[in-house]
Image (tube, rainbow, N blue to C red):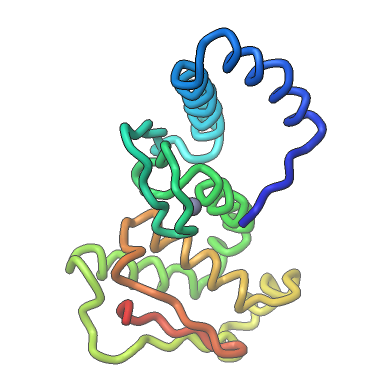
Amino acid sequence: MKTMKTAFDWIRTILVEVPAIVFLGPNKAIEASLQREAEHVRAVAAEYNPSARPIILDDLKTCRTCEQNTLMLVWPHDICVSCWKQLLNLAFDAPVIEQLSLWRDVERLVKTCQDSGGYPWEDPIKIDLAKSSPEDRTKLSKFENPAEVIEQQMCVLIASNNLAGRLEVRRKKNVLYVCAVS
Ligand SMILES: [Zn+2]
């Protein structure tokens, strides 16, 4: 997941970060840049994800989603800032998804897994979108690939319930399967 620096980012780097390294020395410059990033995370969180908090680490840690080293994780998802932003981007489809009657079953399922601390069943649970109600199908028709959108939203729901290491979603055409992480 590589993000391109925009012209604005480059100007900011030249005007803010380079002088900071020259005047403050590398450690202080990194600290200042982390504080700025934490401030940014807090501002985004206040708007879109009020429970999220930036955690500045003493040592480099590997993000469990993208496996990049980072000095900052976003609590409670425990992922790096860019993965967290991606999670938020995916969450923008949430209002439509939350209107679906099948979504209530998905939420109930994740709640059951959270209560039992993992995936309590032997077999995967199957969600067949072809068998969803006509109302659901009308709402889903706005998406080019509804199964993919629901899969992404389910991943957001699983991650925000701290079940990312225990529960996973697999997709086969229009059918989604929820199962324990193998
Ligand atoms: Zn990451």
